[in-house]
Length: 260
Image (tube, rainbow, N blue to C red):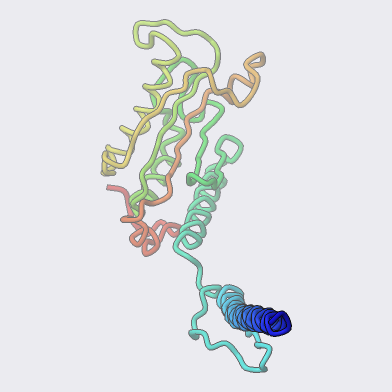
């Protein structure tokens, strides 16, 4: 009996081991299949990714890109890289506008008193050295009429909003007309807006800001510095999305339209 039991016991252990080995082999096989599938998927995604990146490169640069298989990525005839975006087109338009203002200032012999820059916010035109106003006053000087008229013509042709900023030097003022430098800088900005409105420009496009003496661009310790700080800036803002199409269609550098 003891021999039979031993044989049965050994047979049971052998069968149990076989079952364990079969389970282990199944698990290894499944893991191998899993990793093969994952590897295959990763290769497909990589290939698609490469095709996508090559297509994007061709679209953005306008250069023909050849894939690893020797084919080409089909793209539309007009690639994005060849056509400026609306923002780029507007920047180009604003640069032309700035150049137009610089040329007008040069023709009138006031280039030293008019600074024109293109920034993120738009075109900034800075009138310095008292070109628009005499010291302590807020009446537009006759010598500034030609350049302001030219600006009015340009602004008639575009839909952009305009901020007019008034600044003073640090010399205190307290008169019957102007109670402080804040008062004087605000009235100067307002007078420039009124000049444009008198020439038919839409008042909804304009706003005034006053900075008094607190944003100097030069030292107030010298007459030259104070003259630079007495200034008025016009900020021709970038067009709103609604007005961008109109801006890009208008001629801004030729002065073809007259003021109202």
